[in-house]
Length: 265
Image (cartoon, rainbow, N blue to C red; front, top):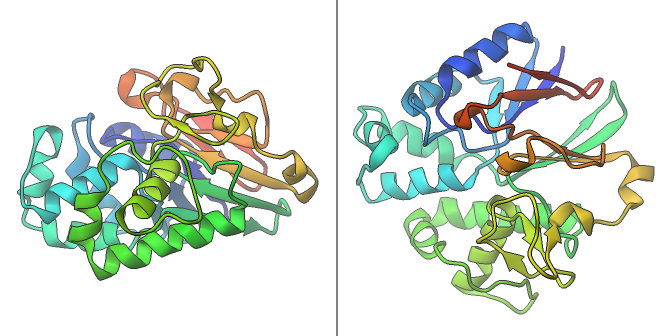
């Protein structure tokens, strides 16, 4: 039995199936966790969703593109690469399936004796993994309770910095932005959501450059997608970037949690 985490697929369904074959995926014994952004940009978002929904051993955290699809489904308005999904006969099932997925997964692997924190974009230094999980759960509960309200109010880049005093739409929005859109932060954990390159502007660095090194002693690993321009390179083995730009003619990458081996196609 193996657990694999796979980076952003973005509707590149053929590459996804090819990667499953390469890792010899056994749908009875193995488990697949996706880092989010299953859809959009690529050609086969609907096929990707239909395949995953039929396999109970495949799950995902939500990415920003998955949330965008949920918004389009909630207003019954298809656009671009997602038009086919919104207009499909099982669009309600797709929405329900996505609604059941979390923003963060924490998993302990007995074989490797490591703990893994899986999100789409990462976890800011100001939050412990425990706090991040609590805030992720908070948004998930609100999404299930009133999906239309949360999905309509999540848009925007403000506020740019977390405060425990935030409430309502602003609180929900920044939690979503940290977990699904974050790349660069300053030392106060202020977000720069405009820069998608590999280099930060003045005062801003990759979010994983700020996280305390205490996780090394605890054998804690952070796994994320979202940042294709990194090509999976973080220069720190405890931060595993899995978006290797499949939809941009790059590769689709998985990591096996038992031995941290990366496999790409």
